[in-house]
Image (cartoon, rainbow, N blue to C red; front, side):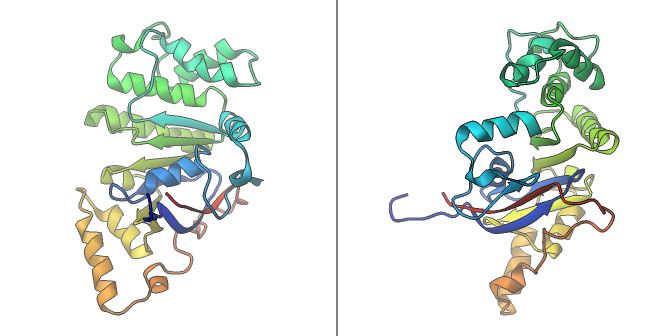
Length: 270
């Protein structure tokens, strides 16, 4: 912006492993949406590298990134993003229009809708369904090409508490029963308490282990607590490296002994 440079992400280094269920959390403007856009191959980092399943995607062009997204990633959005005049089945079929794998597309769509509990609503349009049902359609659409990863941006943000709980239960089941790698972006601390790993982002940088533990203890959104933690560290004269302990956000969970399948390292500038 003229002579002003804003680093949306700065010195982000982390690994996300196959089969993980993780939530990216942080205040508005912290950089979590930029981080998800890079992880989801929607944006490229200005510098640094990002490897997805061993592929160096940070140097791919737009067409190559689109192909990676279609093969490996399913997206779920807060606002559902369904076509209002199309049925649930037609909405779920949309990603197959851009896929190389068109075999048995209709049956795969039916199977995806049955998997999310909407086998009886194949021909219903969005206006004929509740918010929770629309989000289930969106999840079925994300599953149609059998992606390795599901990226969910505030998946319960537009839902009542009961529907939100059902959607989270569905995502957790997909992770546990099908081994899908699921990455959530959320402001909701209740979601943070349900996932094994919280990746906290503040001012474009990864939060410390102490800050991540604080996030998982919350019952209400209160980012001022973490600002106080940061101020306390500054008052003690901790340098930048002390504020972000080595290995924070990049260590493999002790219970997961699989070989890394998804990795990301990168910086972004805006």
